[in-house]
Structures are given as structure tokens and as C-alpha cells.
Image (cartoon, rainbow, N blue to C red; front, side, top):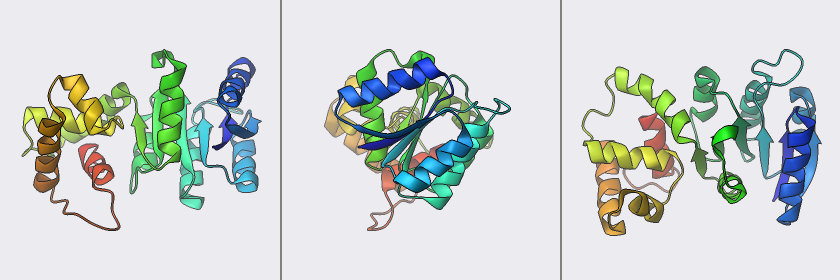
Length: 214
């Protein structure tokens, strides 16, 4: 993969660069602010970006707003937000419309570097990778709005794991059920959410968007 990193903490930025180089990925640029991120993406056209949220000059939401701009201007480039904060308003904008190629992980909850690189590769390939806590906070608004009321509790559970970017096999392992049982739940979810097979839309992604009520 060709990767651009935006992280204002120098030690963490250098650590991410080394981690990815050790796994034979190309780090096209590693920058410390959102403006430099936009420039680097336009110049290098990476497969995926790793973006912190709070960066100079105000250390509020510069990174997340830059990620939204990148998705709008370069829809084929994956974006993995990697932060210690959950910003639900901008996260909803980032995931809205098409969550394919978008991830959001919390720094303190990534305990294995393999989990991070696996998520990054999944996002670069057009998948999703969402921390369960991010899913929970985004899903709260959807539950309060009364959406998805036709799904059973188990189907909600399966859809929540789909939102984290897990495969059917990973969901089966997590729930201690057979993969065939998961496939049945996923099929029921698609039917209840009125998501017929399509050549243009990724049904798993569309189901996640419905789940998050975006």
C-alpha cells in the first residue's frame, strides 16, 4: 500500500512510519497538520490515509474535517481516522453516503499492531473498520430515532459486528455460532432493510449506513 500519515505527535508519527515500513508498505508522506495532509494526498494519491483528529493550529477537529474533504475530492482513497477522541458529528459526515473505504479506530483500544495493520489494509481495499465504541455512540442516535425496529436482538448484534468491519467468519467466532447461522442472519438483515442484490451498491456497507442512521 501507499500511505499518507497525518499525526502531530512526532513520536507516534515516527512509530507509525516504522511500523508500516517494517511490513513492506510505502509511506509516501508523514505530516503534522491538516493542510499538509491535503497537499500530500493531492500530490501522492495514496491508497489510504491515517488521520488524527486534533491537530494544529487549534487542536480541535482539523484532521476529521480534512478527512471529509479528502473523501469528497478523492473518493477512491481510503481514510482511517486514528484518534483518542470520538467526534460523532463529523464522524457521521465522514461515514455518510458511502462508508466503503472508511475506518475509525481509537488509539488506546488498539493493543495489537496486527489489528491496526489489518484494519488499514481492509480500509485501503474498500472495506470498513470501526471501533465498537465508535459504533455504539453513533448507533445511539439511531436507536433513539426508532430505526431498524424490525430486526431481532441477534440481528442487531450481527449488524453491529458488521459495522466494525468483521467478516461472517469473524462474527461466527465472536458469537460462538456457525458461519451458516451468521449467513442466515445477514440475509435476514438485507431483506428487512430492503437491500436487494445490486451490481453497484455494496450491501454490507449499505446495511451499516442504515444501522448508523446516516
